[in-house]
Amino acid sequence: MRGALNYIEIANKIFFIPGEKDGRYPFSNSLFIDDDIKVLIDTGMGHKLAAELAKEKKIDLVLISHGHEDHTACNYLFKDAKICCHKLDAPAVRSVAKLKELYGSPPGTELEKSLDSYLRDFFGLKDSRVDLEFENSHVFDLGSIKLNVIHTPGHSAGHCCFSVPSEHLVFLADIDLSTFGPWYGCMDSDVDRFITSIGNIKALDFEVAIPSHKPITYGRETINKKLDVYLNKIFEREKKLTDFLNKERTVPEIVLQAFIYQEFPEPKGIYEHFEKIMIEKHLERLVRKNLVTRTNSGFKLL
Image (cartoon, rainbow, N blue to C red; front, side, top):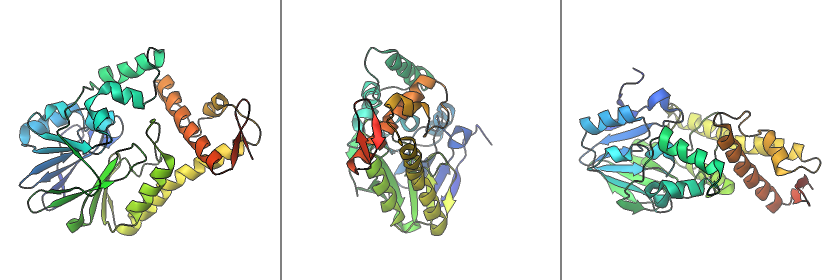
């Protein structure tokens, strides 16, 4: 039932918990492992569902895939659990102010005020404890289940997926197989590393993939096809961008084309800002590849 806490068993002791609105942003899906050590991956399911879960289950470890608001918003409800995340994203989990820095909002501007209101008022986002900082290949021994950390940077510097090798299962987090495609609108996002991370996940043997914002995908061939479609969004965006650079264009002109968002949701100013960051990352990448050149006022195809 939508709006009610739902444990969907996908393997022995492993449960998928859909977030509100089926995990679509501003919510996210979670994974619950009911072993000797009880683990929850991500707390962005929605405050009502997270409060119910915190009351029903004694969670020992909360593993955070990365430090964005839709994955950490309900950390505060799990008072007796250890909060764990990759060391590179720990600062953003600990500090809303640090997360705002990573979103590139200049201090004291209307954009910064708007983003602050969005995070604190809309999400109710709070500074969070981080009790354990992990790195790539860390293994959590939960009893009968071993949970492996796979560092997959690109979406954020410390973004991680989590695998249960015995079940050929992976929690993909924000390698989310969405039709929107990869999102890299933070200052610590990296398009090239995102491409590499998707390739690294494809190279592994998974039969069950759990994305943060979409339903579970079953079957290695289907997972890899969806990863290909997801990855190709990056190159489709670059094709639109390079076509538009047939003459000199400024960054504001490019942003108005909304090559990534197609149209800007509300609050529009924030999403235009994210579009600008992502477009600038594409431009930097194209300049490095000697496909685009900087001009006095903008960029142009070589």
